[in-house]
Image (cartoon, rainbow, N blue to C red; front, side, top):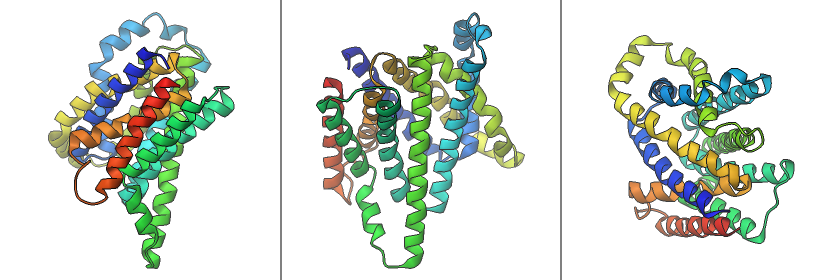
Length: 295
């Protein structure tokens, strides 16, 4: 991986961690995603128009299909993740989602896109996936799995299902977007911006179902939504630019460095409960990302 691609991923991880903390403080659901998509469309419209005015009119069925698929997969990821949080525990869904996503992305890139994996790359992927699992609450999930109560076990199995399914959608949109910028040579900015336009009509039916609630949520969340709308596209576009020059099998797990930054910024790394596991997870992520950079 080039130094430039490595730098883009680290910067993207730091930005990603920041906007995720803001989104978590907003406590939003699909309607918050709708707010951010609308504001994203408005804020980035000048850049989208400037880059796309001569390019987008020339797009054919293939280009529009890949962008539409990207938008759909991003929405499905978000909906499944939120549903998993409602039906099961975050301590089960989250570590599995964040761990399986980069692992599956790398496997698909190696198997179907012809990417090769060096010893450093393999070590890096294993370390990052293990570190993400630990820092995201994996030990708590393993303890919960031993619960003798049948109701708890059923809830855990649901959480595992939703966690893996969320990881599948993470891998899916990663591979689709990576293919768009790496193979089809589409602009990362246009892939993200046009994909966001696809997300708006998909989210609208859910968001507009209860207008009064929507108005109240807008008053409470618009500042957070605006921050996410401004910052989150920057983080993802940086990752897509990194994918243009670096192997997807390296970029996908390396971007999980955002988990390390989020834990440090949010002050969660040293809090009580599984502290040693989280510190070990942080070390593994740091070692893994470094190995991916060397690979």
